[in-house]
View 1 (cartoon, rainbow over the protein chains, first blue to last red):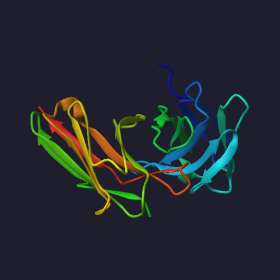
View 2 (cartoon, each protein chain N blue to C red; view 1 turned 180 degrees about the vertical axis):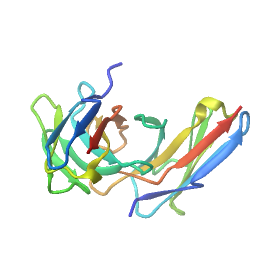
View 3 (tube, each protein chain N blue to C red; view 1 turned 90 degrees about the vertical axis):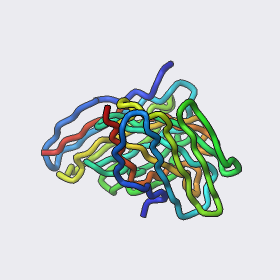
View 4 (cartoon, rainbow over the protein chains, first blue to last red; view 1 turned 90 degrees about the horizontal axis):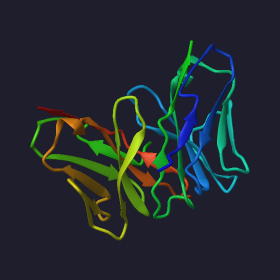
Length: 114
Length: 111
């Protein structure tokens, strides 16, 4: 079965640069979630979209922005990168939000800021 | 602070033994999910239990939910070395569009 696809899998950027992560949800899933997981940390919720509209916002820095496109894929844009942004970024998708629904995670995108 | 807190933070057992991990949360929930994560890999969904359910089974996994105590437990029976991973519980936020994770339990199963 198709899973959540994230790209790129690995990314190295310098401080103050910009990075864009892409997420392709499971087909027919209309909700996308972004999470950040630092080394040895639990996943932190950043932001979610339902039907191309922002549905919830967590601890996402102002330097980050995200959107969901008409084909339901989503992109997380990170600007003015800092060393502390180095983390594993997960995208997840579900059908219709969390109410009784399972959300499925991608393998993640490793971002290293040097 | 995070919605869920796992206990213990780390657990080391031998193959064949049972492993029990606990999770506590702070606010009301619609459902609670358990995930497994191998080092540096993605989160794999294990089981979802709804707030009106008390117990759920899936293979060697047994999950209980006590909404009065705001706690859940994950039992892995007859553990295998391949069960070595971190296990997280996660609860849905108020909006229904944010899953809040606990700190996780690191399980080590030795042959």
